[in-house]
Image (cartoon, rainbow, N blue to C red; front, side, top):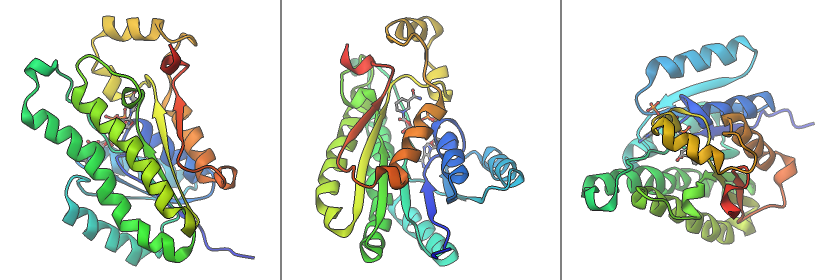
Length: 248
Ligand code: NAP
């Protein structure tokens, strides 16, 4: 019997969707590492909370935008934990503004975090997963990557980029037993959507046929499905988890 515990790594999981993904994967039996960029206390609290529940979780601080920082961090993770079976590229930001007011920095920060960050992290695991002849890469895109959104030219472009990245990498890595998929959440209750003015958010919820905002666990469950044996014959797909916002 193979008793080596599988290792999953989730970027940007000090709160929100990432935190729910960590909890789901750890409950499903993975040893789970996660990253964050500034929330030291929140990251420590997650490790403490999950360790208390008997789950195996560790955290690493690095900026997904910075290739060298990412490379150094993953070298350490491999040194300490030996392998990564599942990478969930979840870290993301918004800098919402009408295009007329959007500055170059608003565009660069969002593209560098949401798209280049996925390149940076996937680069660190792809070769090793290929040698393992197995692996899962799960990228968190967005409904905004499938449809346009006022005030989100930068964000929408980054998340559409994630979908192209996912489909191409799935085609390249399939022969090595690696699946690459994207999850496209709709409106999910996190700090990111708490920042949307109440009136606008309420209007968005009214447009959801299921008439509720999604919870981070709704995304965690789908990532758990893709990461487990249940997802072994799914690759190159974009799974919408949005209460049917995407089709209206
Ligand atoms: P969130 O609550 O704002 O959390 C963002 C996470 O990303 C935090 O852990 C943050 O770390 C981390 N992060 C941000 N910049 C980073 C960087 N440069 N390097 C490393 N980590 C970084 O966001 P969320 O709502 O959970 O969103 C998670 C993902 O789902 C994002 O990719 C987002 O675009 C996507 N998404 C969200 C929604 C939604 O409705 N919430 C919908 C569609 C897609 P710190 O805490 O240290 O800052």
